[in-house]
Image 1: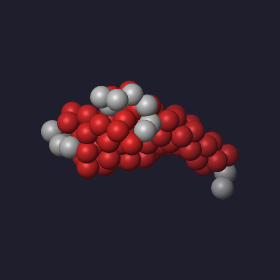
Image 2: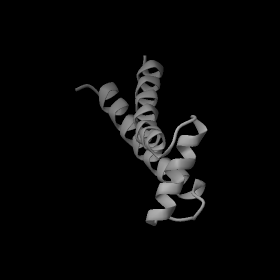
Image 3: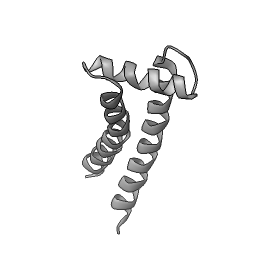
Image 4: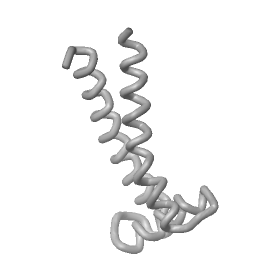
Length: 83
């Protein structure tokens, strides 16, 4: 693996971790009950899902997909700018 690939992998990993932290923070903040207790998580996921016209399951899918999308975008951007 050359340095460009290593740098891109690191950028993707860091962005994925930041995306995961952002997703957790969003769920905790959007719930009707603040925090990361059971009620806060379920109401937060339902609120995130309601933005897309769904419910808690939709919120879970969005919350799980967000860090992956952020990591992929960072990886691609790093590879594009490194050339």
